[in-house]
Image (cartoon, rainbow, N blue to C red):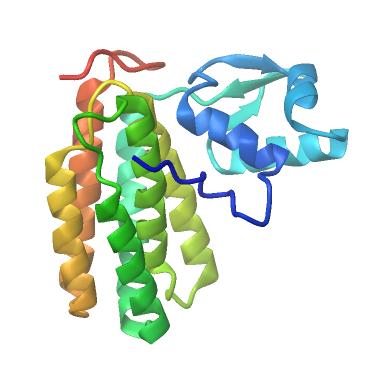
Length: 234
């Protein structure tokens, strides 16, 4: 299957050091709870200490990592409790952003939703695909779809906060992504959500989004073995 570039990458630009670091965290290459020395971060991702300091602040604000002492960065751990709190917050924020987006979105927004959904459906993993690569590629399409859904929300901060919580959820999904395929139920939920959005059924779409996020979180909670990593898929 075709592998899309990561969400922060476009044909005309290369990902920044910060974006590359975030991708390492979201993908699990930097494991939850692990520590990485700041000198290593400088070597791999940044050109100046100013860039590094700004990155540490951003990562802390986004809930992905925090500085651990004077010389290291600690990647945020994962746990059932954190996942539950994240889910409760995300459904509250993203539902509101979606409802407002449906209420104010015009033709350009509707076209963007249709196009992103078409890309999502086209990229559904098959049994012959490499599981980890297929799930990572599908996650990119999934992010584009969810971003398009709320892109007409007139409150920029609401969109930004929604994306922040989406990415934290994405980390949980991708940590488990190499162990289980995309759920057929998630595909059907996307279909129902898409139909409600295009029909401009704002409240119904909002309810479907909440159910979708909660169902995904419940599945992820089943895969958590302890507070730092995931166990075998069920």
